[in-house]
Each structure stands twice: as C-alpha cells, then as structure tokens.
Amino acid sequence: MDKKIISVINQKGGVGKTTTVINLAAGLSMKGKKILVIDLDPQGNASTGLGLSNTTNSENTIYNVLNGNKKISEVIQPSSFENLSVITSNVDLSGLEVETAGDSRRAFKLKDELVPILNDSRALYDYIIIDCPPSLSLLTIMALVASDSLVVPLQTEFFALEGLTQLMKTIERIKSNLNPSLEIRGILLTMFDKRNKLSGQVEIEARNYFKEKVYSTAVPRNVRLSEAPSHGIPVLIYDKICPGSKAYFKFTDEFLEQDKQVESAAW
Image 1 (cartoon, rainbow, N blue to C red):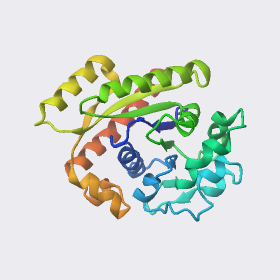
Image 2: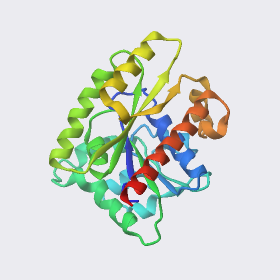
Image 3: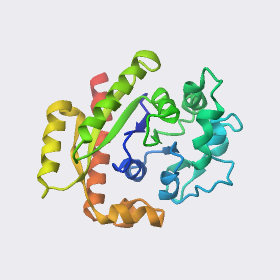
Image 4: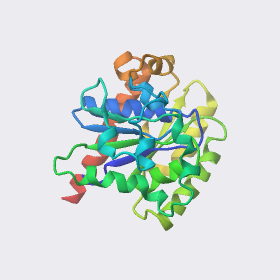
C-alpha cells in the first residue's frame, strides 16, 4: 500500500479534527495496523489525548525535527497503546514559520524527513496520520505537501460548507504547485445531531456536492468524546459502547474498506 500518509485537516477549529486523529489511530491499531501519529498542531492536543506530554521542555518533538536539530527517528515515542507511536508537539512549534523564513524549501521539510521512514525495508508503519493545526499556515502546507491523501472532518453546522470551499482552493493550489498526487480520501461528518434539522440539511448538501467522498458514518455529538482526552485515552478505550465509539469503530472499518477496494481494483 503506497498511500499511507494521511492528514486530517480543516482550517476551522472545534470540528472534531484531533478527536478523529486520536480515534482513527486507535481504531486502526486495534485492528493490528502499525500507526504513527504526527502532532503538527502547536496546541499538542493529539499528544495529550494519546497520553503523552506536550510540555515545552521536551526536545523530542516534531519542532526539533523541522528546525533541523533532530532526525525523525529520534523523536518517535511509543504510546501506551499497542501498535501506536506518536511524535509529539508543543507550543514551540508556533515559532517555526518565522524561524524558517529564509528557507526556500521549507514547505518540503516534513516530506523530506519522512522519506527514510517510508523507505525503511522493515515497513515500520501501515499508516502515518498527521494532525494539522486549525489554520492554513506553513505547518498545514508542510502536511499537505507530505501527504498522500486527506480526511476532512466537517461539522454539521451552519457555515461549515463555506469554510470547506476555502480549504478546497488551498488543496487545489498545493496540487498545482507542490504535490500533484494529493487527493481527498474522504469527508467525515462530525457533531451530528439527528434531532437537529440543520444537521440533516448540511448532510444532504455535503452528500449532494461531494457525492461518494462523504463517509456513510456520521460522528454524533457525544459527551464521552469530550471527556476521553482529559484522561489521555481514546474514546474507543474510555467507553467502547458509547455512540461516539460506535461511530469511530464504523469509520475505521470504512477507512480500511477503501484500501481493500483500491487493492482489488489494482488486481
């Protein structure tokens, strides 16, 4: 499988992006897939949500890889979950844009650093999942350049589709100039409330516009999803049977099914 680097992206905050990274990574690792999560958000919420620290005194973060002080293999940390490793982030990362202003190849820095991992004959990871910051910044551009495909969480609320239009324009620009093979793997509806008419309307609009790119799973609003990160564990482990977990288990199956279909088409 070639298309193994996936960014979870939306320039809008609070749409379930990090929650999706944490629980897709956990779901895939429970299926026996070897996963590396790269936290590319200076807030470091994917790091803490997987039980690791995002404090500022650590040198073993993605920041120290992107500023040239460390190799990527030196900063990978095991999580307490089988098959799941993490490269953490912290607030230091927010200074990277200014610090690398003179580097003409800075957009390719993450991609270049990932090459040795991808070329390692031991096939270290089945998937590398990147948590992007909620902005269209240098860090997001780095992720888009390094990625094979994108998962876009879309909250089923007013103005959600307008924000998505802006993201699509950015993706098209990256495809034209920096990463022609980048594709949208799928759009995941989040914060879905079936009692709310607006949620239903946004779902219909999204499915009309993006067709089969929208996953059939819709992740509901669920208090357990909000609680799990404070315990440093994915909701799939925190409460296996809550509606949020059921949705992310289903989404994990859909995600894997996409690769089965690609593989069978290749035969």
